Image (cartoon, rainbow, N blue to C red; front, top):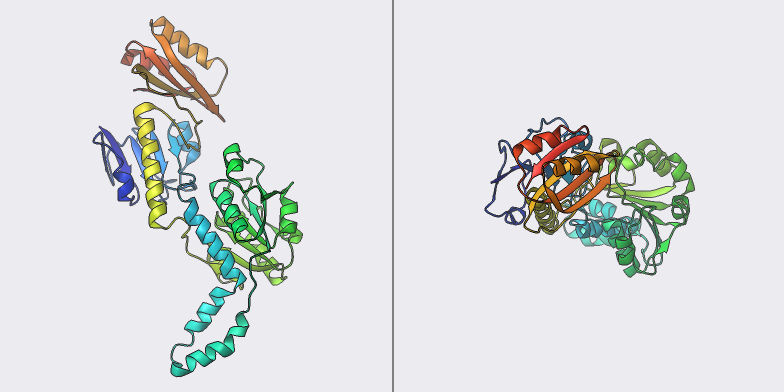
Length: 386
C-alpha cells in the first residue's frame, strides 16, 4: 500500500485516479508521496519515507528543490494542465487594459444611489473610458512554453501581430505555434516592437527583476505589460517610474503586492490563472498519474529536478538508483550486480545537472543485502526495488 500525504485540498477527480493500492489524506504518517498546490514547504521537515512530491500546478517556488535533490526526492509539476485557464485570463487582462474596462466598472459601481439618473450619467461619463482595440496591435510573448504558446496563438487568431522570444524553445512547442508568429532575434527587439508584452517565464536567480529600468527604456511609450507568471519578474521601483514617465500605460498582473496595487494604472487580479474547475482537475489528475507511475514503475515525467526517464515494464525485477552525476558510476553499479550474478535485462541512464537516474531491469531477485551494498557506493543517493 502506497501512502500519499495531501498538503492542500486536491480535486476529487484527481484523487479518483488512485487505485486501491493507495491511501491518501491530510497528515498522512510516513507517506511515500506528497501532493501539494500552494502550501509553503520550505520550512517543513519531510519524513524520510518521502520519495516524491507532486505539485498540482506549474510553479514550484513553494518547494525546497535543492533539499529534495540532496535526499533523492523527485519533484513533479504539471506543465500545460492549467495552460488554457491562464491563457484565457491573459486575453481578458489584455482586453481590460485596452478598453479601460476595470476603471469603467469601478466608476459605474460608484453610481449606486443615483436612481433613475444612472442611465444618463453613464451616457455622459462613458467618454472618460474610451479605449483602443487589440486587433492590429503587436503582442510580444516572452517565453513560449505551454502557456506562452497558447497565448501567442490566441492573440494571432484575434488579429494581432505576434512576436515570440524563447531561447530554449522546445521542438514540441515550435510545432504548436502558428506559422504567422514572428520569432524575435532577441529580447530587446521584442520589447521595442510590442504594444503589449506578456511574460511567461519561470522566476529564478536569472530572471528575478529582469524587467527593470534598462528594459523599460527600450519599450514603446504607452505599452501594456502583463505578468501572469511571477510577480518578482518585474522590478517594482522601475515599474513605478515607467508608469510615471508614461512608458507603461497599464500593468496587469495576478501577482499583486501592496506596493503594486497602490500604484496608479495597475490592474491587480487575484492569483486566478489556474483557478478554474477544469484547471484544478487537470492538474490533480496529471500529478496523481505521474506520482503513481514513479512509485510503481520508477518512471519520471515532468520533474523539475530529475531527468525525464521512462522504461516499459517487462515482468523483470526492477531497481532504480539515484546518484551524483560523476564518471564511473555505471561501471560501479553494474559491476556490483555482476558480482551478485544478476544479469541486466534492460537499462536506461539519464542525467540532469548534478543528478543521474538509472532504471535497471534484472533477471533474478534483488535481496536487501545487495541494496545495502549499492547504497555504500560513494555518490549513490537513493535505491529502490520495484
